[in-house]
Image (cartoon, rainbow, N blue to C red; front, top):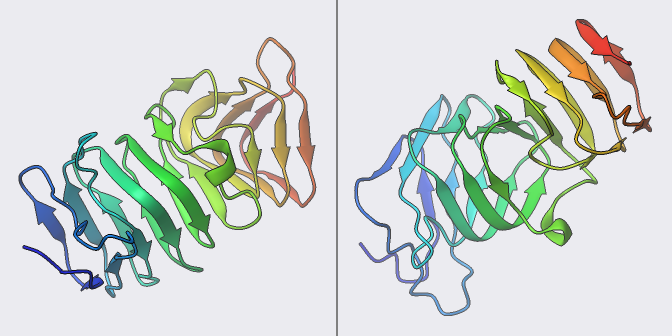
Length: 198
């Protein structure tokens, strides 16, 4: 199925049960698969080094959660999450060249996320950790705009933490670790569960 350089809008679920060829025939790499449903949506899209799952991926659904179903997802270009939209990667690995996050990117904490430092969005949006395990660092890194913990797990810092917006502990434990990492918060601090300050 060749989209021939056009964008693809999906209101339901997206399933590719083989290695994706992507929508990559457009030589400038500008095509996107855009999720704009009005309820929860799932993405099943295989990833390999030769053929990432998507050229660009855009999440516009503000009425439900878009989630990766069972596989690692690779984005050759930009992942865009609109304001009010949520992408939950559900513990699956994923990589992208650039993240533009005006909504929420949700991860458990034990998966592998590969975004070059210059491609991470630390000027807007929220990163939410919702895992139930014990994690020795924050997989997205140590720089955030808004950062939320909403899982029953323990999230220990692997480096000094910088939050340019708000830091919220809704559920779970934030631990500065035995290395006594520092935390800088430019916005509000809300703790409704456990903060281990050492």
